[in-house]
Image (cartoon, rainbow, N blue to C red; front, side, top):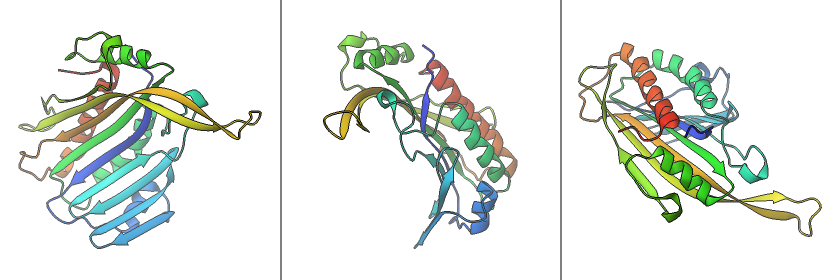
Length: 243
């Protein structure tokens, strides 16, 4: 079953062989903004953040890890499916890529591992509808949708990289059905607010290069690896579990 997913968030994580240090110039190069709306700096930690791409964009570093994160700032859509998100998938991913690919091309620190972690949600009015959709996407579970309750299915199906010889990619996906209770303003009701219950099929992906690979990667390999991770995520969103 092909679903029109909503993108809750996207994260690109880069791991280095040395401590990662960020500067305001890094934020400007990544975002195109002269100054971040927020900047936080502490011992071994430096974070820049500001509104972008329909959400909150964050560039942060702690120790030897650097994260680019696009997260939601609120709910979008009508009350029955108003789950916080950064927009439709894959449009949100495409916007995220346009910012982060040039950042990778000019990276100022060596990278030993890379991870792409999008979180996708598809709203449904009824729980059974969400489980029916989930069963159409999973190949490892053979159960009728009406027999499922509180299912949390997490699996890693590693695959060989086509971009770097000898590199394995962990293809980690987590599938679940959640219930959302959304509070909305009711102008003509007896109370100021009303609760709307919605269900969502949730797909969390964490596609990452295996830590056993001895790096760092060559600078010219970073974007091809990134494209490979995004293509794997696009395939999971379109086809479901890929064995």
